[in-house]
Image (cartoon, rainbow, N blue to C red):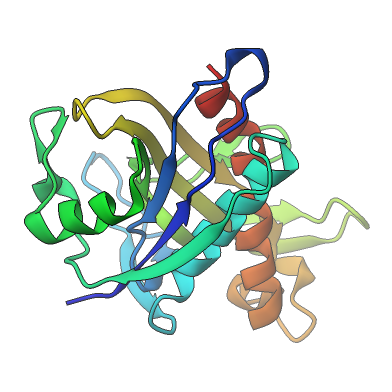
Length: 246
């Protein structure tokens, strides 16, 4: 069983002229406890994703805490609530959220329903991994093959890419990505009122590797996590005001 972080905004959301009076919001991330490293493998004449997918384990709750902290900060930056009290609760539930839905209706397990009832929340913002075709953003192109999901890094060790700052060319690139779905769920009806899909990415030439030509080392460990955080922050800053203000 995987412990998932659950944050509650117990004050009313203040959404300007479109405020939903009496709405209380709970935030739940089910992003898991690992990043995914996707290594490109050429697949000529086939639509099957033949890339190698490896899990890069993080500490228990690290990913969900990161996502929720960035979501709360984005809400605060957008001025969507007034001095909301934020509480933390560990939800000892299974990672997969598919079991929480019958068709499109949100039908949580008894333990999750009880945890949500304790918050008096009227709405749930569910944050989960999105699986979509690889569309990695480069300067003048969309790169990559196969599918990406959640948070992680895509590695291509064949395509030549030029550094944007000095023009140096390297063989291969590293692409941090954040593929996430946000759902705003009415807890009384179980209906999803709105949703947003985030497919953010960036590309870094292997030429940025100071010690060789492996694109994986174009960023060190701290820089990799900072790149993931920047993607999350930018997309949540963009998506949450639209999702919550209506």
